Amino acid sequence: MTTDFHQIEIFVAIIFAAFHFFSYRAFQARSRWRRIASSFSGGLAAAYVCLHLIPEIDEGSHALGQRIYFIMMIGFALYYGAAILSTRQRERTGDNSSYLNLNLFLSAIYSFMLVYTLGEQLPGSPALSMAFALMIGLHLLSGDFSLLEVDSARFRRYGRFVLMGAVLVGLVSANRLPSSVAIVDVLTALLAGSMLFKVFHNELPEFRDAHYRAFLAGMGLLLITHVALEASQ
Image (tube, rainbow, N blue to C red; front, side):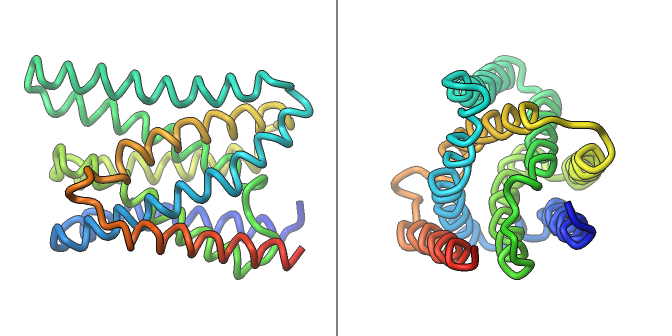
């Protein structure tokens, strides 16, 4: 990996951290714009999984075989199961702090995996890498909104810094710790499964609240970026 590519990774990670840091300000926007932003980021993330992550998993299957899809399923099941357990506990006890802390921990793991696997995901072009960073940043923003809805004060006080720390740990781990293709492939599969859940859970509003044109715009933008990436290779 070249020095230039390391610099791109660092810059993308900074953008992710900035989205986490300023997400509470975006949350203060009118609910209509939050609904449009959630639908738009849902389209981005859905297209990203279909056009980019799943092909990456297909490549990983050469080393790990069909087990790679089992790992992807585990990623989805873990995040879905945690959401069920935390929601039921919150309804039973009325404890928002425990609910926030568990989901904050899961979001931190998610941000870590996203940054740790950047080397496999970033386009070769710096311009396309910046477009990728902004689009995935919107996806992270939508996840932060779901935490802000639970307890905006706690998220602003410490939650956003936890997520920024996860981005930093992912970046340092990817560049300083010894790794292997198998580890990256496993984390990419777990990321894909958890991203699918997050898209369904956080970024696709109820039908009555959905903004379908924003969703299609997000998908279209990712598709255009994907075509541009293929043309540049």
